Length: 69
Image 1 (tube, rainbow, N blue to C red):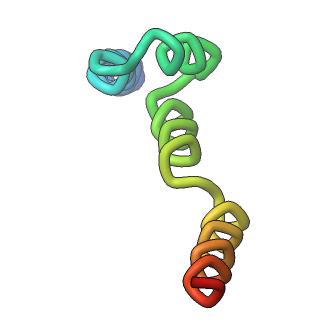
Image 2 (cartoon, one colour):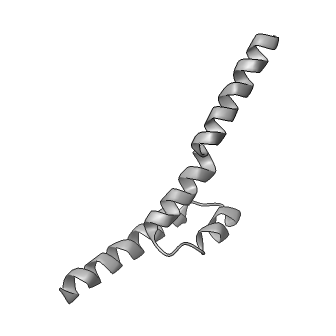
């Protein structure tokens, strides 16, 4: 059991390093508050893709601009 838990912690640490390696300094500082690789991934996904509401608003804006053109 302990070995399994230790392995998960090591895997999480490795994943956190991989995720944060190529980030800008601003993005990196945002990820320092995250406790796990999963949290970092979720934060980066929302930052770069946006939430469902952001996507919907972006789509509506583009449709409006297209129709106004």
